[in-house]
Length: 468
Ligand code: 4AD
Ligand code: MG
Image (spheres, rainbow, N blue to C red):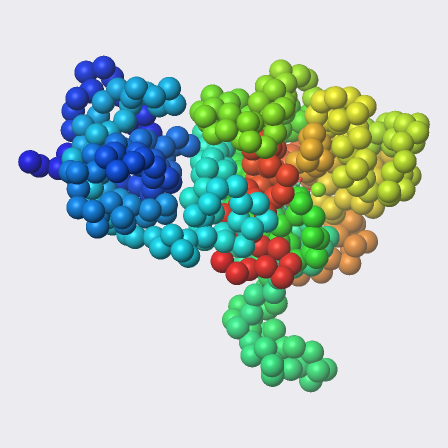
């Protein structure tokens, strides 16, 4: 008899119609568990397309003893059999095995995922195998769905996806260290007569780094195509060992000509709600699993956010609220100081009980490109703050006036030779424009309810950690 085409397990569990029962099916996947007795074996198989396993039932006498011995947790098998209604409560259908083929054995003595219930810390040490767990399967499927939703949201709005470079000669944010990209000999680099490293002889003829943001290039795009966005990896060499910082993370940066800061806030709020709604509508099985296993307030929190209007207020008002809160903070609160995660979370979780958008921050604590307010002290910045996360989005209206931007660049000693092309946009057909950056992993962290950013990216890059 011919082997039917392979079915993915999600289809079998979710799309089986009454007329499909009794048909022969073929599936492939990894064994999660095998139990039973000397007559019958129940094999739970998972192929990663859905959180649930399919149950394969094998009559022991129908198979070589040697073959069933190799059906162990972690082994990869192919099964052909009859799809039948399942008498069990847990699953709608199961498969009565006619043929089982071992595609890859897995030694029970050494397979690290032999037992259930490993800690997330342990699983980080086996990042090459953790996608085989229910938890990481769920997280990575949600991560995929959110990526797809991001492209869908912007495409439906008529925005264009811009691929900003990863290797760059400029420092967009002017904050935090960057990773250098070089092919010079690390031990004996060529030197200038003054004894400095001679980057003129490096691969690109100048000093280059991994980008911290695609924003400056996105601005060039917006001032030509109106609405654009980037979605790519960004790199920060800060030594921040926190549950919310990665050295390599993905960022979505929309940039819009003719948007002021209010349009910018409206778009950010609409975007975040869209992504959360998309996950609720398309990833409910995985969210229910995470809700049950890790965070029983998760789904309720997600639904709440799609319902409420985000609170919008100025940085100055937020400082007043924090000062009057009577709360004991670890870090000081004073006008002019940057807000720490503890302050942001107080505002969101305790004071307002919903997401908050803070605007008009002191000029000294924000990047050079932000539009200067009339007061000479603040800039048209906007940070979106979320429960459990703190800052999830940072953005601003941009300074579009050539003289003002140049003045700020000079005040901050940013070499004009690095940003002349950026300044050019303010010389030729400048326009009011705005944009923001959403940290993708912070969004995945929020949607999955996980506590550590290392658990929402397949291969986290953090200080002292780049094993996989
Ligand atoms: O606030 P940031 O630094 O803003 C920018 O880079 C702007 N160029 C964005 C723009 O206006 N186009 O970073 C934006 C977001 C933060 O709000 C945070 O969510 C995330 O990126 N982020 C990080 N995520 C993980 N690890 C890190 N080290 C992060 N640093 C920033
Ligand atoms: Mg920021």
